[in-house]
Length: 212
Image (tube, rainbow, N blue to C red; front, side, top):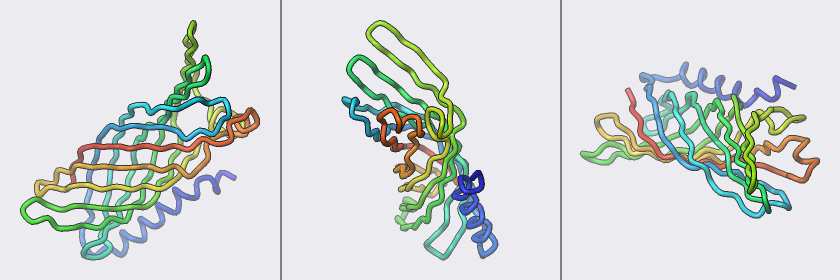
């Protein structure tokens, strides 16, 4: 069971090793920090609406050349996700911190005198490190730590699609846009039994980075 759950991360690491072994030119390393908006698409009959929460993220990145114009970009990041859900007299905010491995194939477009425009897409695999749930009613406010697992609050593992673009200046400074579209239903069996059919992460990030 555990090996199956970790399979996306293992596949990504194997692909990276294979690509690194084949790379004719040198690897590039970089980092990215940024902020953005996270929301969860939640299917629950009692839910009136959801709103996004502000999140912060940081990534260490590696690029492996595949050809003259295409590269494989991966790394390890801290990705914060969550949402605020509104029911009749209850407002619930989830805040979850994940360790995330993205894997994108990127294409570089040369922009004379400015640098390069980079467009990429792929997937990500993530594992929850910690989280908290805030409950607010007209007369009270409570906070609980999120317990992860199929028999607890939310599932620990998340995976989905990743779309990114960045403007890379000649001085290696990058301006980045990034979108995570979660395809893994993180609603635990307990949630599904009590009326929440599905919970999917969505995150839009904007940030700055540097490549060496």
